[in-house]
Image (tube, rainbow, N blue to C red; front, side, top):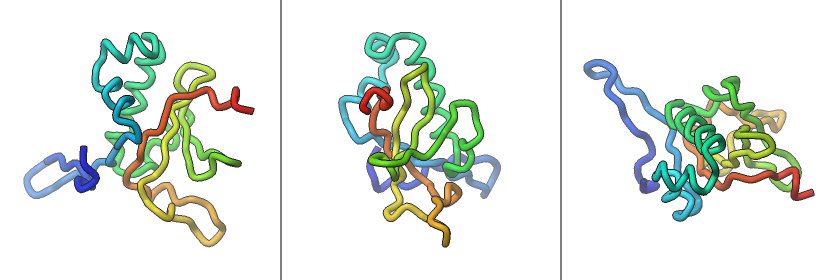
Length: 133
């Protein structure tokens, strides 16, 4: 999907549109894998692949990042050297890592990210980032 397509529009009823969050991938190879069910199962294993499918659908179906905040999957902001990125659980200890399209990331006066204003994300990787320490 090109960056020009900011929103996917779905007709709900005449003259009413639902803007869905734009989900892109930082890596073409990773994008190819997740768009091929057999490859996805082979690369990630059936359990992780199924969790990954669910998380991608959750992100794509949301209008903003706020809509997934309290869904199963423990969507959360990362800190330290991963500040500005988010993660959600797959199978333990693996996480799906992504970052908002918005630059700069919307913040309130206290420096907290405003999830409601994040309208698109870029999928970065699937990783066990706890192992990196």
